[in-house]
Image (cartoon, rainbow, N blue to C red; front, side, top):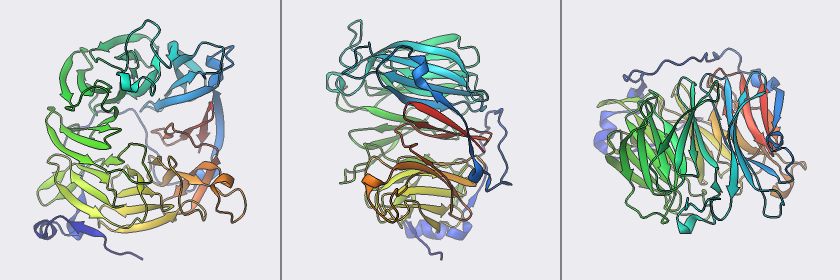
Length: 460
């Protein structure tokens, strides 16, 4: 059953762009050449027979440690060749010195190819006495040589890391050779992103600025100030739009998203008030991968959520609201567009993933993903991702370990792979729940996720 759910901001807009007139078009901005082969949608059930290819036990990079090992963040190169993993080995009760690493792994063989960072992970103060965090954040973030964020250039040749030592470091992803260090922030760097053309890196710091760097020269192109003093909040995410003309920065405590143009001018601030089911200080958002043709022409779109359980689509160039999508009855925790831009998926605390058509602006399908468990406690449900061919959706899902018993204590966290065409679960990976994002390789052949202190690599 289909039903219209589009609520436009004005009668004039409704008249100008009826739902039937919305079409998806490739964006006119030239895109960088990518050395990836995307699998075509000719094997929709392939992930139903996925096999565990290998596991990476991160304890091996901490020989002799008695402390637990925790993956912190990871990234996959766009050419599907390299996996970068940041991890820490520490616990207050451990006798070993706490430590941190950033390692590179060959995705074909599972072998470690380079150790880029090997240092400390201190809780209170950095080893040399440097102040790496404002006073209010000292007990929240680890200091020393911790890698908070990782990003690859579009060609997969360079890997970048946002560091607790206030810098961004760059390496050759094939050889592990250091390229340069970007210095200029006053405090630790917690978020980085690289523009689609590979020319600009954005870094978000606890000094509450976003810096845009020229990746070829290492020079700062501009600094964006969020108008707050260090310690009042922390930047959690930065992201470029697919056309490279807009930038997003997300604050944690303020629960606010700032949309900028590439020249550093603010376009619009979007805020989400706190609710009983806190989303961990993160406003879910997603950029449309290509652009939607409105009456005014081809427009880059960003999707966000509101506390009233609706999804709003915004013009990323002007900040004007385009449409509101209504249908969830619980807080929305994650959004993602399909690679072709035809579908928007939303993960909600009502226990469902909804698929929205960007052509008709209608709800196409509701997928109950929690096997009779209608809601999920925070911070569960932060992760949602389409496969490169758009036929499979990976989502956090609960699996009842006792038949028909809707109890969280008896229901392990897992990751489920769902067939978009049928809504059916293709495969469930128990115990893969983690605060670390999961990934499909761009060639569509592998699925990568964290299980405890190991990284599992699954082959379709």
